[in-house]
Image 1 (cartoon, rainbow, N blue to C red):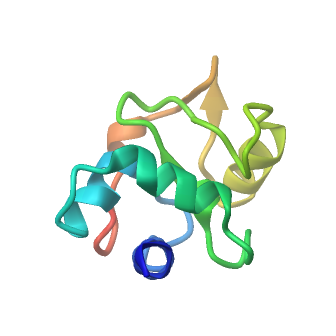
Image 2 (spheres, rainbow, N blue to C red):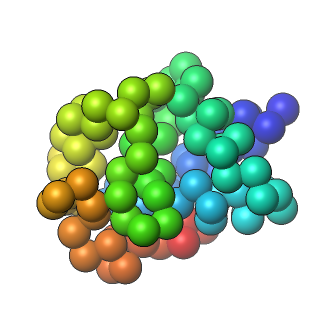
Length: 102
């Protein structure tokens, strides 16, 4: 199941780091970036399975749990030391990565 593979991949992103929809798709050998987003939107175990750590390739937040209201996503990231300013991850290139998360 595609969604289970997505959840497994995002579970590897450590706290304080982010990855992108594109990077997750690439690690799954697909270009289905939007399908990654759809799987995350339906994540039944958020935030335990940390879909809040997945953002757009330009550092913008994207959605969270099917909503473009990202205040919860911002709060979860901030609790992990990832801060957002003007809708984008602060120091994005430094926060991008971690074990299998770039």
